[in-house]
Length: 180
Image 1: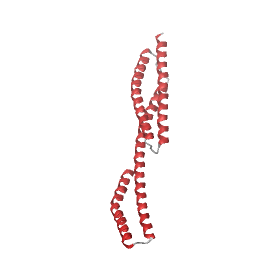
Image 2: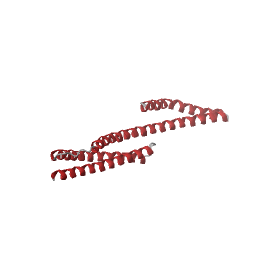
Image 3: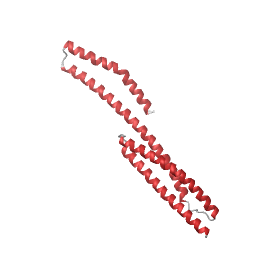
């Protein structure tokens, strides 16, 4: 919505460009022909300066809107991965390691499937972190937040990996116990 409003603003500025340019040219011709006094020259320079400043502000606003859009897309990806991790963390926190060999084997198969899924998400998290680092290196004005979020994502991923390792070790321990 803000991008559409900004595009309309840029279109309006572009439509006024010819009028401003004509006023500048006419003012310069009148100054040459009639040797106008200093106040008219000052007003023409003020018009030129105000127009240039307005165009610069519009360009800066457009750039910040683009950066904010990329930031929001980055955040959406981070939040999606964090939601997946939170769900898996809850599943891995359950202390049920099976009370029969069949149950343990079923849980080990589920854990193997989780590990496959985890590797895919690890790759996504790497891509998201790389994207965040690129946004930072490109000078996105949300640099501090971006850096914080991709570092948090990595921390949560490492925590989930450690939790998965402990869970798998407990499953193997329980399997060995039940085989006795």
